[in-house]
Length: 158
Image (cartoon, rainbow, N blue to C red; front, side, top):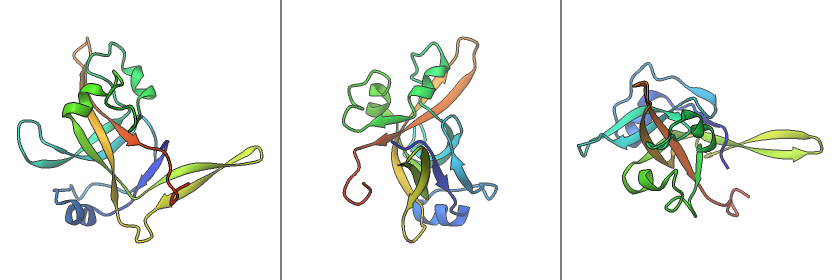
């Protein structure tokens, strides 16, 4: 499961590779953690236009009373995403691409955990499949959040 990742590509590279407008103020990030903003590409609601947006990592379902549920919903397993109540509605209607240049997996070495960075040899950006949700709190606060869809490791990553 992805718990930390990087996004170090320049705005120009992201714009060229994904065909979206990117603010020149967009900055490289080397240790993106849950609850932090993540760059995602989605179809702008009500249009067919792709847009790059910042979403908080940790999906909060629209029906949730407490936004803290987002801490438990940072990743959605591909094998169960269509059935899980927290992800089901977003899976049907609100998909996105979460931009990354690599991710960390932890290797246990005795009593220590060593982060191992995994990315493309070219260091070009790629995208995780993702879901997004719009949440409205009882106090009127609004959050747009996301989860990354994960799957079991394959021979290349295992």
